[in-house]
Length: 57
Image 1 (tube, rainbow, N blue to C red):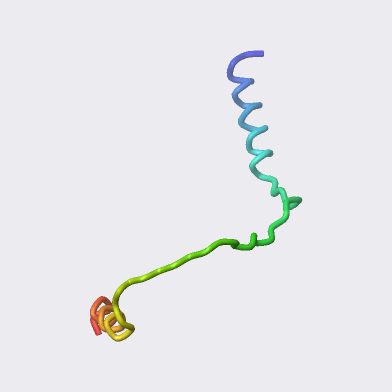
Image 2: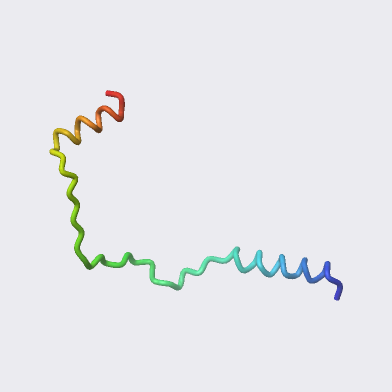
């Protein structure tokens, strides 16, 4: 087998492998378990003003 023949066969094998979709896995979203905190230190009015400023309103 020549090197060119190997390359062509390898290319075809990879094209077939990537051309198939594996739908056997579970596609459900995992649940988040934990704690998240966020403190911006700004009031809602300040955040809205900043939003309007960014949007050019």
